Length: 112
Ligand code: AMP
Ligand code: ZN
Image (cartoon, rainbow, N blue to C red; front, side):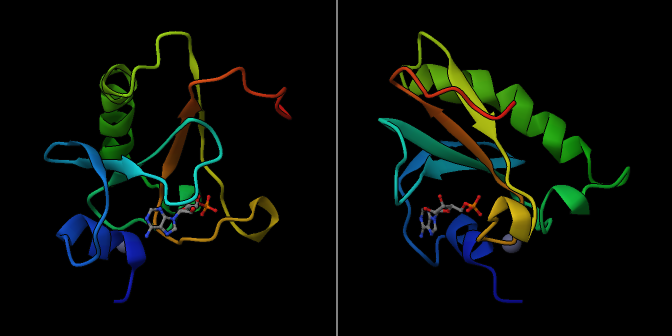
């Protein structure tokens, strides 16, 4: 299966790694929307938020356990935003579950 983020995790496509453990890979977004814009992804392929099941949801917990460390490494001392886009209405462009971690400035009001 051809998946951009699976290829990045395997090192077949270069990325700027921020954090890695057994379950999680985090790297800088290639098109940053804030001074800090990191993507945290599970090492297992899940298509997106609607691909999360009781069988694979533990990797989501692993990502959220890693996020404070990713924020610390990234120097996010004053807060940050975590976003996942799911499906066309949310403009998901890469069909591998990922969480955007955004910060390093005052972010605009969000929809929610
Ligand atoms: P989304 O639109 O929520 O699916 O987010 C996909 C994100 O992946 C976008 O913010 C892109 O800038 C980012 N992206 C796409 N290709 C790469 C890449 N090769 N390395 C790092 N980030 C990427
Ligand atoms: Zn994948």
